[in-house]
View 1: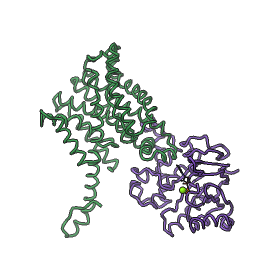
View 2: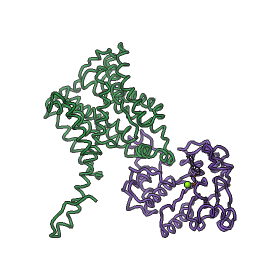
View 3: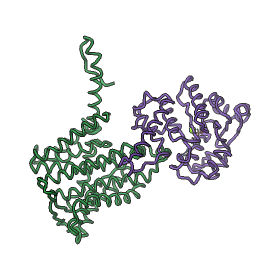
View 4: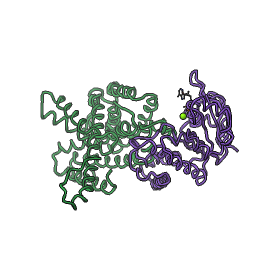
Length: 335
Length: 255
Ligand SMILES: Nc1ncnc2c1ncn2[C@@H]1O[C@H](COP(=O)(O)OP(=O)(O)O)[C@@H](O)[C@H]1O
Ligand SMILES: [Mg+2]
């Protein structure tokens, strides 16, 4: 593990780079990074549920869609400022997730995966059905919010910063949650639910609340995407979105906070690279990428970085006595 | 008044009668040994007190109030801690984290206050960590504090379970075969620890153990089960002389 000081330095450096990007990248590239942050928020939500709490979800695209539509309908119907729609989407998705989590308590493993999958299947069709609110298959066209207070930022730059700010706040809250008493209980349920109960953890309540918080994160991500893309349509929230989020979660590192960011980069950029490599069979290329990543980094990108970090520190420690002696240096083997 | 009172408790699994109208009392600050051949029902009795198993008849009271309607996750909060015969740790978590989870029942921070890291939450977390470190020192576990529970030797993990149970600051502690996998010196040391837990921390203990010398040394009272029935109860000396007990043990294993 990194020390707290090192972690703070890494986070601040990353933030400094992130703040510089809008002034160096094209609007299109910047939009891609905004999308990465949105995915990262959604994946952190999924990680809480699947990685930390051990509840499988193949349907988080549904919460993403609900968040996006709550935001879009509020803006389109009632002219609510986009800034207000984001917390509202979060709170409503928290409630929806909690309520879905209650019956889900009776489902284990693959059965829960199937139940969430059916949610992902159903939500786009339900959205089409309530055409009066949602615009049906046509969806809703929104306007991109522009920077307030006469800030010299174009809409893409402004949205980038809004998304970055939401990401920072949600990751800070999430890290506090997962590293404290509640996070320990969430993991305890995953590791051994009987022992967790014996320690006093109300696992039914904790599992439902974790479901709620997870859905809230993914819902906020959806709400941000509505403004970033300035358009919502049911078919952009199909089952494939749910699978994509799960891929990002696994590739980034399941029970990891930073892993959510790595996973988001993966699902945003690797499909594009696959497209560049082969126009004819991009998904075959993507599949190869997936398999290679899982083979090389069985604990996700975050897990691989952690291992490298530990190894680097060990070899630094090991080199101190070696440098005093004249013996030929040998790569330290992991013990 | 008895701190724990077991009254005519029976447990059935299909055709098997695992416990058959078992009754006994534990007084505050007593160490009670619960012995009997394998399959006698000792663990089943623990699981009734922890509310992991449903008793089919009988009653259990803790501090005078009935226990059998309490949900399992409230037992620790009442002041009853336990360890598991076959280990029930959180394998991916470090030893220190395992012990800190043991404090769940006596700490209060919830989702919102935890996420906001309010000042009192940070204080609670510091206290919880300091207490866990005290327990790790007490049980000589400091060297493995940051090691994941998975991969440590069985005997070490038994001590981690003990530390985790103590983290809730229980008043009654149920130990299910704490000497499992220990060598002779380690069993001696465990006996001293058990006595210190009673004398210094003021706990009441119910001890299931196969090491007869340990049970006879530390117990104030011994309860003997055989095929789910209580066949004897008394001081270690009385129980050792009891013909029924001798028969039960000679019939299965020489203890
Ligand atoms: N969950 C269970 N399902 C079925 N039978 C059980 C279960 N738990 C215990 N038993 C049975 O109850 C009896 C007592 O077991 P146990 O309490 O584990 O004995 P001890 O701890 O004294 O060795 C045994 O016959 C055992 O097979
Ligand atoms: Mg047993």
